[in-house]
Image (cartoon, rainbow, N blue to C red; front, side, top):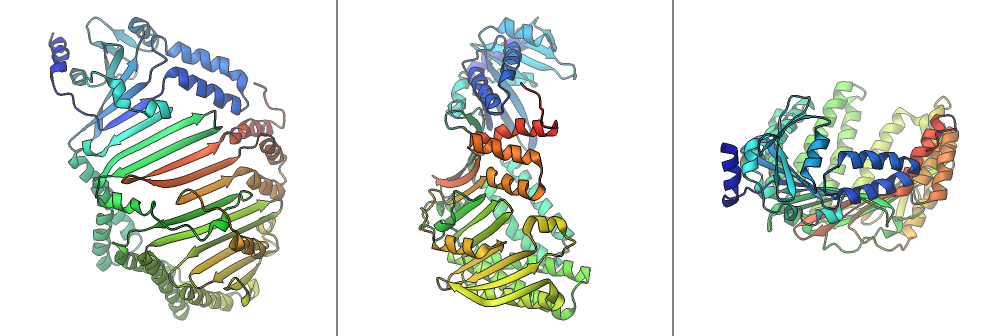
Length: 532
């Protein structure tokens, strides 16, 4: 009787707002996407079995409308109250389906579901939805229109979650900050950080993680899209207007075009570009942070005992110069960099370039380290300083000899590995490979179109597998390469862009990669493989 009164009077009460809303697209749309993914994987004949199983477990559910999960947090308790809602077309049929896997007590208006794990679930029908929870009291505070709480997530994603930062209790946010801080403190102590520096490092770190309290909303979604032949995950985070979080993302929208567009290459196994402005407000804190890193590194090296005092001084000098360049670059307020990795049969070359505040200081540090290594292992490599220039950039070359007994490494890079360091007026270039000079020059001379996004990474599977097949000789890899060339669509991409008060990030994979699943199974079965 008490429960009936509570449910009946709930509509006149203030319904709490969930801190997290999880969306599941309609079953019918999910089934269409499952069929697409199964086909793309080469197992199309398994669709009938999958469809029959899904149809069985969704009896009574309205397959044309989305479902959802609502999470409510209280105080500093990290365990939320959870309410699931399902769209129903026949509640009795749904209960019959549930009764096949759990005991159902439907004597009262509030249904009790008793799974074998000993937990008790409570369910109630309201309108054309059924609400399910482990906390019976939550059934007295149900929303009138749960579908509206999902927003546009069901139309955009198969599965998505919307976190409302303002609805997460301050006590819980502070608890999260304290846990992160304690973890950082433990890491500093484990690295042997000077106790005199720990307090300052913790204070600086606390300022950074306070951003948790400035987060307004987070949205995460996953989608399979047959039309574009892609699977994707999207992540959006926004800060409260005027907050430090919101200001930190503003630089992603206002940066000048990159000077390293030539490093983007559709034929590369990997290419990337980063070009955005950074908030210089906290740039002064980078120096002390770098100092701490250097001290930790020097402590580790000293404990190893591999270097004498003079060599340790050289390493410290080089590390300090690099740290000073990093700090000065951030103070300039701009990050601009690009790179590419070319791979093919028995060949690979990696090249990258970036804007730095003081390239000459990078050059000085590199020469100190080269001199140190040269004294310790003169026979292992050959150094050619100032051996070439290109577009006003001075090139230094290091040729590393790969020992004959390192057969696996020789299979990978050959008998020699060429390293390049290029020093310009405002740029530093790095390269490594069998013949990286031509690749680096082509990238420096390139006039590619600047990427649409301030941060973008592309990974292409075919050239990676070609290189792996040529160095390992495994027939399965040859089959996977042939399959990918037949299907195409082998690219994975990650990019970010600014939105109002926040940042949007998308990770996507073309569906050609799914075809590798069947090829891998065939290879593991000796080339036969089961036909589905």
